[in-house]
Length: 213
Length: 213
DNA sequence: AGCAGTCTGTGACAATTATCACGCTGAAAT
DNA sequence: ATTTCAGCGTGATAATTGTCACAGACTGCT
Image 1 (tube, each protein chain N blue to C red):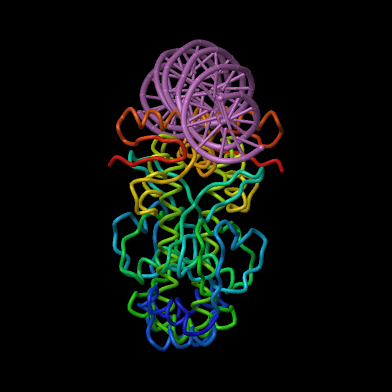
Image 2 (cartoon, chains in turn yellow, purple, brown, orange):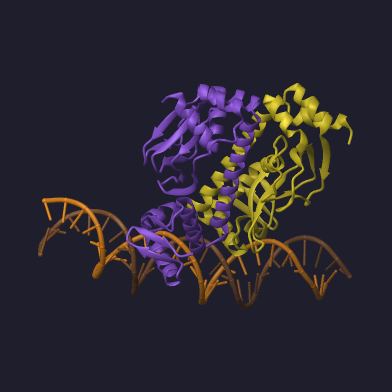
């Protein structure tokens, strides 16, 4: 966990930070490696760091009372967990689950310096606000889909997100996983996917889906 | 629109602002009176001010493609439109509708000073972050309900919000208005309300509902 | 009182989604 | 090669919600 590495990640993934801010983060932050599949945040947990994603992908999802889970959005390198910023600042507990989908590298900034960063570095609070706004927007868009659209459109929206996230025409995923993320049943997903296939929108394989758009 | 009035509103509804901040707001802000029923924000509109609610109630809702509307949350005195803060800061357009439900008094802070407030006044950015977090939470809770619950529970949740918002055991509202807010049909609302009445949860009158809890 | 318009109640039916049941397939394991 | 099992396809059926049709009730107006 040398500072050489932190500097490297910051320069590469957060180039928009002003140089004083980069220096300061280098001084106070630590780097954490999270193996794929591991939880970063769970409901009820106190947050002691603001988490900046440097490498990997983090999936945020909400858990229902009966254990249902629902996908909210992905966090990519260069983004921060908006909730971790706020929860950290207010010393409150999180309301969502965050799971590393790949091996992930995170820059952990202790709560104690947030105030200082906010006060001294314009690029920091711009970053925070921008991040917050973007997540808010994503949440609103998701809400739109859940409120106004049917499963067919939600599935297409979900898939288009997964594909653009993956950056490939091909993703490895099972119908059951999709059903979990959309909080529906596997059968419904299978049927709708089948329909998309006959509509030439996707090609279905075992464990994977190919995007034909 | 004298500064006497601004000071009065700030002292009363935003007492948690540090005194330097109060002074500064008094210098730069203006007061706007919005008659009940009028729109404060509409999608696509550029935001030039951060809006602090001093009096009245503002309803935020999202509009679907076909004109459906869906209630998101209320803003009360002492709160700010989180979106207006962000949109103003980023000079972007809004994604939601905001309507004054009562005659509303708002303190309008020009975009141009947001940077300065953020940098110089800790109580300001605390306020902004706290507001943002609260709205984010409300949005997440709403999402939960829409994703995981049926109409019956959503209706109860909606009503309990409306009642606590109104601070009365009695609200003036039609089934059609509720149906609009929940993006369902009047008939569904009527039926579910009827069931709630037989379950002794509410009493129904023409144009009003009484809460029996 | 009589009329018009809004609000509400309710049955019948359609559409969507959830659940159950079961069989098939392809990949991995022994 | 045979077994085993997760992943997938699909019909049947239930549950929830949306839509249509219409009637009665209340309100305000003349």
